[in-house]
Image (cartoon, rainbow, N blue to C red; front, side, top):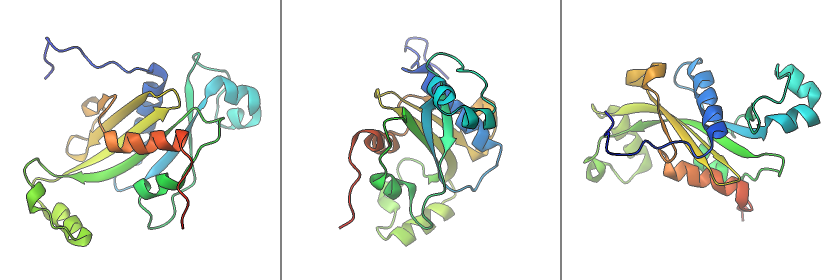
Length: 189
């Protein structure tokens, strides 16, 4: 329920919002229990101009809306590596205008933080067995200009009308994605 006295958070970049929602709808079509996914966001007009064969293979026959993004899914992440860890070693070339990630996680209700075991394996088991857990799919996207947008879908409310979206819903993931566009990747010692 929205509070009429509070302004509605509008996307700071409508093209990014459209790309994130497009990715969310695409991934939702494949169901649940999917691995993490990573997407490069490229300017559609530049893609058509620089890579006409790729644009044709993707059924993009024109530049689309001025400033629109085309999501390009990247190859799978290294087996057994968490997305958050993999993002620390990724840096995008200048031709990539932004990036987006899709992850599924278990979310626990507020107030159970003190009950979560310190051991990661025990903590995962605790979350999986908690009666009030929620499964959520998060899609987060960012641009080099600093814009961000997110879409969240709960498994318990798995329909397009129940997707929650906004600019700062997953701040930790957004921070990691921004770093891939602006920082030099961390080197393994």
